[in-house]
Structure formats: structure tokens, C-alpha cells
Length: 241
Image 1 (cartoon, rainbow, N blue to C red):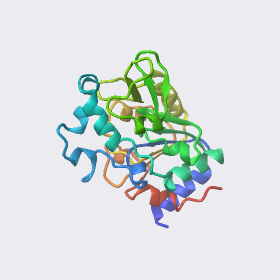
Image 2 (image 1 turned 180 degrees about the vertical axis):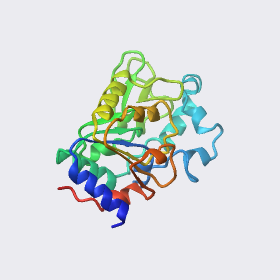
Image 3 (image 1 turned 120 degrees about the horizontal axis):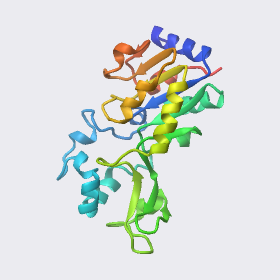
């Protein structure tokens, strides 16, 4: 165990109001591609850049192409929770972790057993008809063809926040409250490049800011503890007690 991980263990041992704020790097060890790394979605070749395809405008004007990309790249049902997801669920069960705030849409935190998960960017496991509001599950979307339609004829939209769309106010409010009241904020697996999600960290007033990310982030210089290693590798060494 490195000296940094030993420090993290001590912080976790001594506090029981911890909040975790995570991004794509938490899920890459489960085989889900991120956006900005060398083999991430932004570096793959499509007719349009991913940030264009995943915009509200593109979704409304070219839904066939949106759903082709969406099924191909966003609907991953083979991924399993990794050591980071599992350890965070354990910490919650032990009464130490109060919330997971995630920018991911893959449901892996819930699969690992976490109960208090605030999904800033929604989830591919929830979908709804834009006309009548009826809900549809992951399987329906995965097995649909072309533009998925409701029995009423309306187009079905994934409950994910596309570019140009705002975040859910209730989720933001709960996230701000959790961060503002936390003793420890652990930021993990995120470059903190996506706003407004990254700005929520400004509400932290607690004792320890911990940043765990392979590459540098804008918050590194403010961190009480900085660990530049894969997050699953780090959490696999933590003992919950």
C-alpha cells in the first residue's frame, strides 16, 4: 500500500460523512469507454463528432443517426461493477458514505449495491415517451430498431442529459446539499472538464478534499490528498471497518 493510499485509509477510518463525486474514469475499468482519453469516444471516427451526435438538436433532427450511435456506444449491458463501485457500496452500508454523485449514466453504482446515487446526467436504464410519458426499460431500447416508438406513436427518449439540455434541478439541489454538509469529499475518475457538474465542488466546506485520477485536474492544487492512480486499484486496497 502506497503512502497516499494509507492516508486515504486513515481519512476514511476517522470520518463518517463522506461524499463521492465521480466521472467516466470510475467505469473505464469496467470496460465502458470514456470520452476524452486516447481511445475514448472523441477519438473515434463517425460521420459527426460524438458531442454533435449527443446534442438535443441532433437528437431532434436526425434521430435515426442518433440511435444508431446510441445503441452502438452507449448501451453497454456486459459491463460489471469494479472494485471502486463495490467499495463505495460497502462504505455506504457501513454508514460512512452518505452519497455517490456521478456523471455516469451506466447504473453500475446501483448494480454494486449503492442506494444513494445522484445521477447528474441521467441513466440509460430509464427511457420515456416524449408524447405520453410512458416508461421503457434498457432492454426495450437495446432490442429496438431504428427510432424507438411508443405504442401511442411518440418517440422514446433516453433519460440522459444531452448537450444543450439542463441538469435536473432536484438532483442538483440534493448534490449541493450532500457536498456542502460533507466532512470529506472524494473526487474520482473525472477530469472535471464538464460543466455545470464540475462546479458543484465549489460548495465543499469540509475537512478533506481527496482527488483520485490518473491525469491532472483543475482541483489538484486544492486537494489535501492527491492520488494519481486508477481508482479501482486504489479502492481495492481500502478496508471498510
